[in-house]
Length: 270
Ligand SMILES: O=C(CO)COP(=O)(O)O
Image 1 (cartoon, rainbow, N blue to C red):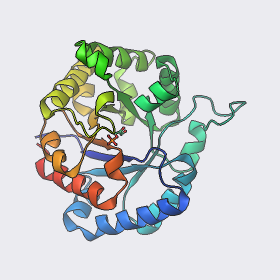
Image 2: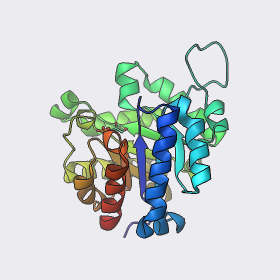
Image 3: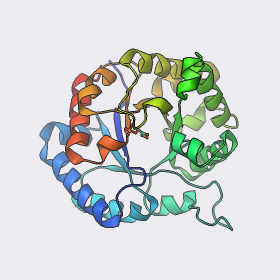
C-alpha cells in the first residue's frame, strides 16, 4: 500500500483564457463535489486534484475554486527565478504566489525543447520556488532518440542532478517537491509509456532520491507519470508501486475525461 497522497494534475498548456477557465473550474468543482467518492477522498486528504492554467487565467481560477469550495490545488506552468526586473514577457515566482499558486511546473520538456530552457535555468527556478514556498513539479524525461540509444536512465539522472545540485539537504524536500516523469515521445502523441517502463523509471527516480538524499525523502516524494494519460490507461499506471499520480495534458482539458482519470486512478492506486 502506498502512503503517498495521489496527485492528479492538469497541465492546460496554452489553453483556456480567463472566461473559459472560470466555466471549466465551476464545472469541475460541480463534478468533484457531486461525486461522493471523489469529494470524500479529497476532503479526507486521500487524493489531491490540481489545475495549472495559463498565467492570465490564474486569478480567475483561484476565485472560482474558492467560491466553489472544491478543494482544487492551483499551480502555474512556469516562472522566472528573479522577483522583478527587465525581463520582458516573464512572470516571477512572487507574482504567481500572489495569485494563489501553491505549485509551479518547472522544466517541462516543451520549455526545454521549444523555448531553450537549460538545466541551469531550471535549477535557478527550483531554488527560487522553494525559497518562496511554492512547490515545484519538476519534469524530467528522455527524447525518443535517447530512449532508442538506451539512455533513458542516464538522461533522467542528469536532469535530476542538475535540478537538485544546490539543494543539498533532505530538509529541502519538506516543502513537498513533486517530480514528474514525462518521456518526451509520449507527450501529446497518444503513445503512453508501458506501465512497466513508466514504473521502472519512476523507481529509478526514487532510488536516485534515496542515494542522493535519504530514504525518508525517497519514500515521501510523489512521483507522477505524464504523457498521453487517458481514463482507460490510468488504472494500469496507478497500480504501479512508484507512480503516485499523473500530470495530464490533453485529457485534463475536458471535465469528464479528467474526472475519469481521477476515478479510475483512485480505484487502482496500489
Ligand atoms: O505534457 C504533458 C503534461 O505535462 C502530457 O501531455 P498529454 O497528456 O497531452 O500527452
